[in-house]
Image (tube, rainbow, N blue to C red):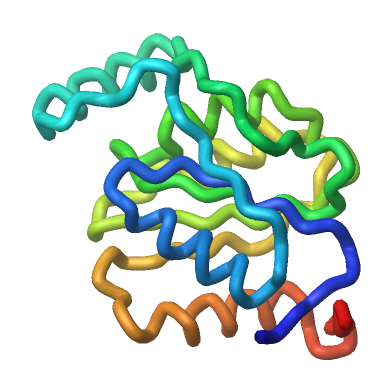
Length: 171
């Protein structure tokens, strides 16, 4: 396992179908960070059309879902990886709700997104707007069927954001 930083690392994500979770788990394997999943208090509908209708309404109205308590908060972490599926071109409302409730000032933020080819209408900007006063690094976009390439995709992204001179062993 490659470990990149001595800093405290939090990997927080919302995953509807498991695609974003796979990315989060790979980031965790490569960084040794603490992982925590976001859950809405009311689960999203399983029916795709109902899901789209609800997400579009949440995005239009700005009304974010209530969340179940999360095991970790951003307090005490230097680096936060924040993950979401691409929902209607932006981040999923549960991640938006978590970011809105979290003080990220002074932290390094690394957004990561799963998508199935959908258009990005400002996913990175949505995170940036909710995280003022942060050092936001390049985002990672992973196509849903990255399969065995995921390890190398994440590794390349980490190396891009944390050059070799920054690499420090956690051991």
